[in-house]
Image (cartoon, rainbow, N blue to C red):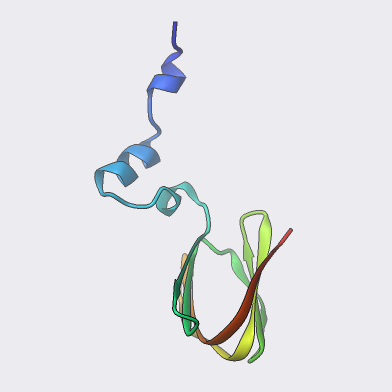
Length: 95
C-alpha cells in the first residue's frame, strides 16, 4: 500500500511541471546558466561575499560559488538572481 505522501506532488513540483519550468526554479535550489564564457546568470543565490574584477564569490544554498576571470562585473542583481559579465576562467563550488 503506497503512502499518500509518495503519491502527491508538492505544489512547487506541480507548478513547475505545468509551466515547464526547471525543477530548481521553485524549489529554492541554485540555478546557473552560462552564455559562452562572457555571461553567467545565477538564480537562488543568498548574497555577494566578494566582488573584484578578478573574482566574485556568491553565497548559495549550502555552498559558496567562486567565479574567477578578468574584467568581471555585476550586470544586474535582484533578491533572487544575479547576472555577471566578463571573461570567465573558472567556476568553483566550495562547501
